[in-house]
Length: 73
Length: 171
Image (cartoon, rainbow over all chains, first blue to last red; front, side):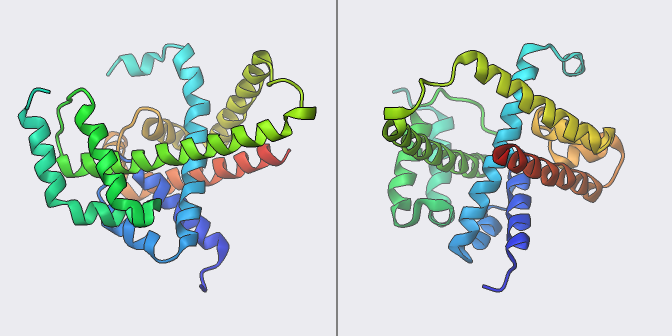
């Protein structure tokens, strides 16, 4: 594999980020990317963990305080 | 169980998309067990209370992604428990709740200030996307900016926060 490690991490992070979008529909592209190497799945899972860590950290306050911005919608 | 159009419609979609779903599950970590995992996934979907599904294909792929995350989470916490058990002989009791709350609060402050440091637009876009669950296209139209600007801002936030997590873990 010639892809540099940091490029792999960057690519995996981009997938983990795009998947969050409720309109995400590039599932076949994601499958194809994951199939390229087992390292891709490991990098993707690490990126998903980062994303979930942030969401969990932020969700804790959001639960405790009522965000008026959100009620307006 | 009562038969309803929703579930049978989803099942028809599952049969139609079976090949694509199996390929995804295999690539996503299920490997040779993709068939079994798809079977389990369907049991889970069929036994859940019914909700309106706007886009069945996307619903099934999303469910497959979440299912793989659940499996991974279960495996990781089992490994962690095992590790804790082995380490227990000379380890202190579980971290007290008060300390855990402190850590969570501290992490939150780090995340908040990392986002604030990226500027109010990046901060807003990230929260809209990750906390409010609004898609990139919708955010772009809300703010009157291009889709690629939204994606670039999100990338900045994601990159920064991944770096932050690594820093906090190695502290």
